[in-house]
Length: 190
Image (cartoon, rainbow, N blue to C red; front, side, top):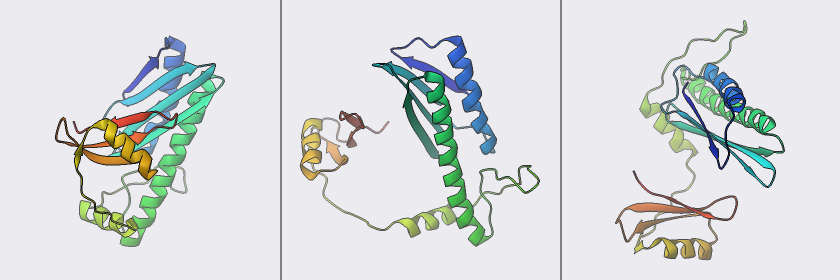
């Protein structure tokens, strides 16, 4: 597992880097293959609050967690705990669906003797059918070209946390969204 640790307006000490790599490296035991991309760890300190954000992508599933505390080491511990909970929840959901079909997941499961059991890969068609069962509503609406500011205004008027629109400048579908701290973000296709 390749882990990229960076500081956002913060110098990451070798001790912090080593601690983060050790703790986050423990997550590798949950997967049969390493993440498709580098695991991104971002640390920052703002007004005495130590924030750690971790993103990792495995088998096309993006896991992201963020934690804040008064101590960077505690924030790292809490973010790893949160990621383990997300992975466990995802694994349980997949196992339940696959068990119904006689399959096992690509995420390792522990057997009674404490060793990791084998695993098989479900077909993409099975996964798609299972996801459609969870889909409860489909919305269709016209997407008119507009600039980012207009999209932000539309989002606020609708009272939503995100808004899909066609960017008039690039003629591509974009998403504008509200972040936890009240600022806005923009998602553009790569």
